[in-house]
Image (cartoon, rainbow, N blue to C red):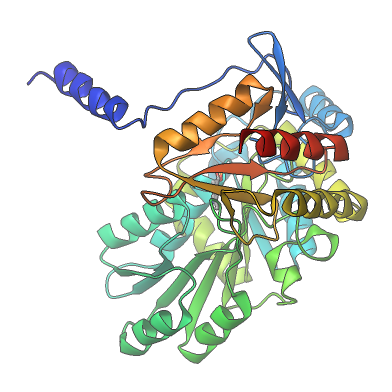
Length: 388
Ligand SMILES: Cc1ncc(COP(=O)(O)O)c(C=O)c1O
């Protein structure tokens, strides 16, 4: 079959399974309200947990940064694209996270691709949580292609992981986990995972995309939440396009591990550095996060209000203490129907379906932000009750 026809056939299959995805075009900046097709809706779809994507100070830092440093970096970091704002940001992230050194990336996806396959090759072993984010799964696939033995343990199952570690004779073992699972909102048991890493002489790679800025003192993230200090056995990835409100990511770790990633991480080396203005904006964002306890208190109050309000509905709210509040609907069509009914009532909540989540657990992923008001949450709760 010619290529075009085979693609058309596959697209037909996707549509028949109710899995076609479509994009909505926003006619307004990211915020608690979004304008789509000229209509204003309440936005529970973004990962802008602290409401910083529309922050005027951060936008000004970006504009000033572009004026001073120009629009682009011009090259990859190792060639000539590593400008003073990038260097400053890396140093600020290292100080903030408590690790000796940090490296910044254009996206979290690229950051994850730089870690696991760079550290794990022939003869090494990777142990990954089954519910890890797609970018970590792809990183694991690359490690596998490099010859690493890659295994997935059932979600947060420490006993299963322990057994796998005990059976492994690999000289380099790497445990990889989301800190806050992106479609469930629950936390990985980081202290217990770290204890296993110590016991079996393994590294622990943590993806804190959804914890950074939100959890722990000063928003330092999941490690702060669990009171786990920086350690040479730990590598921390954080994204900067979610709570930080801008874009990009970092990996923080020991001096040696970061130097190794800089020398060998293909998705670090072979890509153009982010525009320096992005780094200027992120320096400002980091400052706001550091002093953002009031934002985090508001966010936690909104989460508590939502959870209280949704108790007793026919749909199951997963036990999550984070900004990600998944409401399990079940079948794909039912999740889409609910999402559409909410949309018609001016509420934007995306239906998340397989393959992103397991079959039969299609859900609404309610993303709470400090930018939401008490009235916003009350409106969502009221509408869901009416639809139930
Ligand atoms: C857990 C997790 N890791 C990594 C990423 C990728 O980050 P980025 O969007 O910056 O590429 C995401 C989301 O996109 C995520 O949810």
